[in-house]
Every structure is written in C-alpha cells, then in structure tokens.
Image (cartoon, rainbow, N blue to C red; front, side):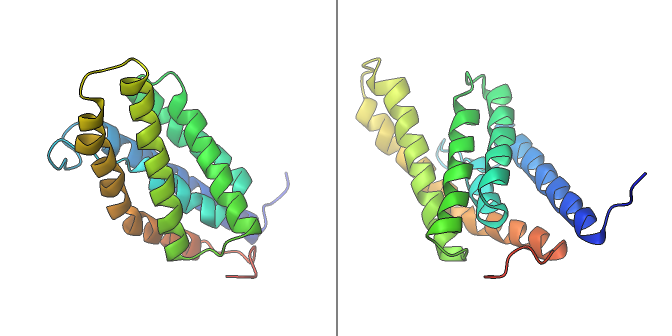
Length: 178
C-alpha cells in the first residue's frame, strides 16, 4: 500500500471540505426557513459558492463542484438537470477565465458571481414565464428575479472568504501567481 504525500493529503482534505461546504449550502438554500427571504426573494447560495470554488480550484474541479452543487439543487427543486448543467458550465467558465484572462481576487469573484446570477435568473425567467406567455412576466422579472440576483451577490463576499479560508488552511504550492 502506497502512502500519500503531505501535498496529496492536503489536496484531499481541501476538496473534501469544499464538498462538505457545497452540501451544507445546498441544504441551507433549499430548505424553507433555514435562510432568510427578503419580500419573498431567495438568495441562490450555490452560484457564488461554485464561482468561488472555481476561481481557486480552476476549471476541471469547477466542473465537478458545479455538477455536485447543481445535482443537489435539482434533487431538492425537481429541476430536470438544468441546474447541474448550468453550474457545471459556470464552474468551467469561471475557472477557465481565471486560468487564461483574469486574476483571482475578490473583485473578479464579485463580477463573475453577478454575471452568473443574472444569467441564471433571467434565463429561468425566460424559460418559465416568457416562453409560455405568462401574464405579468415583466412584473415577475423585476419583483423576484432581478432582486434575487442582487440578493445572491450580497452573500458572495462571505462565500469567497469561506472558500479562501479553506484554500489557505490546506494550501499546497499549486499556484505561483497568488
């Protein structure tokens, strides 16, 4: 039996703690009464969690954490795999942007989370209200979905620093530019 090196152990611990964080955030987000709603608007905590994990762990890990978070969201919300696919794409896109174009910092995470939240909320609104021609579709957009994207972005700093703490706690010499 081969022994794991210290670096491999830290990587396993780091990724396990990130998976536990995603599971806990999924339970908090999807259980009624566990997280405050403001005027009926819910924060989508898994979107900033996946973007935060993706900017630290990069693209491939971002895909798998996005799949985990989205699959849990689909199980709770009966969402025909839309959330799993969306969060996997977001995880890959954020990780790839950090690899190729952007730098990993707080402002970048806020920007990526804001864009991802807005895309999710507007896409959900289009699919569930506009395509089926629901009355008051624009009222729903400005009453629930745009405020939901903003409410999600408000909790983005907490999740960024939570993931940063986990990353720093189990740091390996993986990235030289940070």
